[in-house]
Amino acid sequence: AASCEPTQDMAARTPVWLDCDPGHDDAFAIILAGHSPHLRLIGVSTVAGNMPLDHTTRNALQILACSGLAHVPVVPGLARPLLRPPTTCPDIHGATGLDGVLFPPLPANSCLLQEKAVNAMFRLIREADLAARAAEEDEQQQQQVQDCNDCNNKTNSSNSSDCNSNNNSNSNSKRPRSENESTSSSSTAIYARGSGRVVLVATGALTNVALLLTVYPEVLQHLKSITIMGGAMGLGNTGAVAEFNIQIDPEAAHIVFESGLVNMIPLEVTHTALVTQSVRQRLQQLKTPYATLLEDLLLFFQSTYKAVFDFDDPPLHDPCAVAFVIAPELFTFKRMRVDIERASPLSYGQTVCDVHEFGKTYTDADRNVCVALTMDVPAFWDLQLAAVELANAKSSLNSGTWQGRA
Image (cartoon, rainbow, N blue to C red; front, side, top):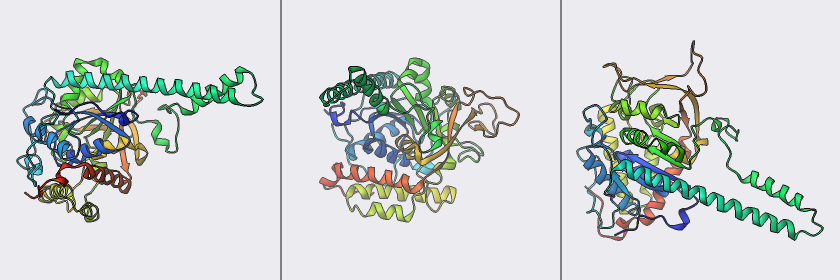
């Protein structure tokens, strides 16, 4: 059986938990989260959404296995929304959720956890947060010792108070920048940020996340943010003004959005992450069975998006949320009040974004969500394709006889 423990060289990366419902675009979110040099994917939970839960769980295991990530633990979550009947999306993702390819059999070393998802999520998020805090303390102590040694080794050194002053100065220069401090991008001062070290990324319905916050409200102290792909400021995709992930469980979305930790990557942004011919050509240059599998997934995704939405090139929604965690400077965004419509049969699932605040007197706490407005698309594709190259180098598909064609 595979070990579900991270390797030591991953310890310095930002720990990320991914809640998803694979899904063609979820597959690429898994690859980006698992192979970004800036992140450590500590676990994956699956939820019913694009497909029923058994499909999304198997799809997550398949993508992890063929991408050199079989060590990442997977736990199945909820099989239906909190209050509403389940809804799936075969028109876009086919009968399996990852139509377009035939996967090889799942390997025996897949890391499927046999426990309730909310319990596993809380346990592993808490462990990762505490480990990250301990690592930070160790690093700070080591730096203080090094600074003091450097100070003592100086010839004609001044008194010990100067040494302590230097230590404090160096420590301050290395500490993480707080959310209220400006950086080279002024917008980075306002994205949602808690006191924890773990980022929870959700690219499907927010059912699992809502239950986690309800059963374990103390998890908030271990989270840096909850970054989601979902919602829309204007037109929806599966509703007139509702995006699919929010629409299928608006009650769950309401619970999560009230946490104050949400970064929302809406359709207006993800619809710019188009899988163009030039993107596919960069993928084709790898010329491996693994690259063929990914290309075939994208070709199926392209065909359904053309048939349903008349897009010539399909938008790769879900990795945009992971990219936000890696490089928020690639995005412009605005903190605003966002409410979830849960009553109207015409617009349930709408993310009501109060952009202009006409006649309102909101406090900072009232502005509960950071909403992404734009994204540097070429830089996004550089991140995604770099992760694909790393996954390609570790893929078991490239060392076997599997050809990758459905």
